[in-house]
Length: 208
Image 1: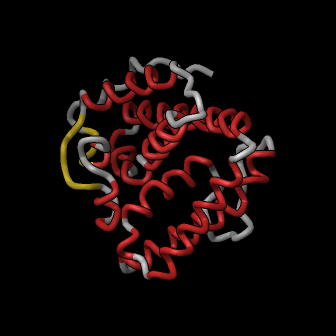
Image 2 (image 1 turned 60 degrees about the vertical axis):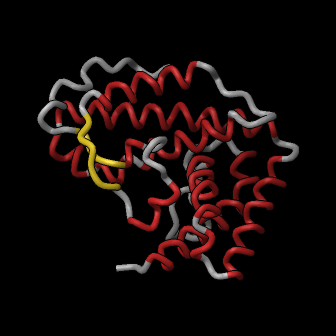
């Protein structure tokens, strides 16, 4: 078991490495970027933004030198984007379509593999969180979000919400402060096994 501080430390290290490798990732065309440090997840814009959103909220739990490292990493990322607005927007939309397809596939899986899919919910919902992180970034100036994406996401959320069992926060408690229930309702509970057998059979295909 890791302590809350150890969990935050690892998240910070991942954020730092993602910030370092973000520029070559943006320039590339690959959607599967393995970071130089092999014990870390694959680099995505969404994975970086998820961490950039939550770590500053929880920075009081970091040591002063760790807070300084967080600031340096975020500044490095912001500098990377200065002359790459169009490229970042393009790559972010590529990821959004991939994440939406991934989330749709998971929700469809609730129809056929209910018990397994519900058991995996806490790990799979990471996709829904990164979708929000990328959308929030693209809503900032000077970026532009494809208006079809919020509509597609609304369809998925409505489908999940119709078969939703409210419950406890599904991730480690250390993250809860960064994810208020009003906005991140899908982190507080799980799909309802009793009603999900036909819940997702009407999900539309996500646009390319």
